[in-house]
Image (tube, rainbow, N blue to C red; front, side, top):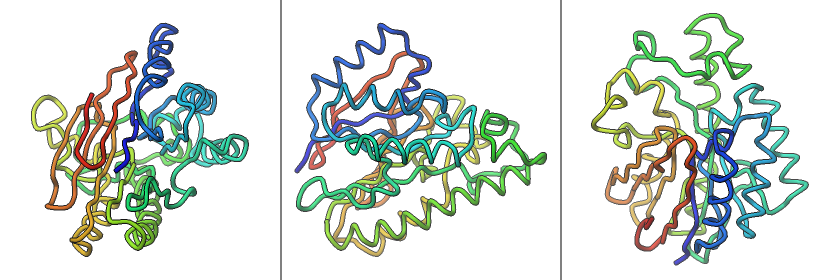
Length: 271
């Protein structure tokens, strides 16, 4: 079974030169056949250069999904164009949704979609909380109402869920162990149970119900397979068994202190 190197919520736009140097050394010296990134690497203006920085440090294939912060200061369309161009220029750096099913060994497949908080958990119309997505991502900022913004988020989440359904169908045909990288946790069970993020008002902003429904359906339909979800967004480390064959791990993170971890896919994570 393979060992991978993975991370999420690096927010390299907040990292000092010393923190970047430490991250480079950690990536270089840590075992793992590939580097998997669960979103929020940076912000739009510097995203591709920061992905290249990570690939240069890793000296191994890099597979990533996009987080909400990766679009800040731009639009979803422009960021997607930029990362597709990057993958053409640097084939070792692949945005997972269009990359398809990546085989990590003969029986382990990696797939991924970005995922968007879609307001399907909790009440998106009464919550007192708001994310900067509403003003810093072009497509979401354009509608002037909460309903309009939610409509855009749900359209993005639903498109990712549809793509994930197709990818999972292909993955289970070739592998018994399926690793799913995404940014926004697909399950409410993966949210913190204590602290400020445990407030139910955060659920509409911290869970992608659309991708969660697709993953639950796949796990229930393929009980002889195992499904492992790697995600981020909350910055709170969580490791939860959602169902008997479905596990979800959220990467812990702190602004200004980016880090990586290894994951032995036959056993679990070690830091």
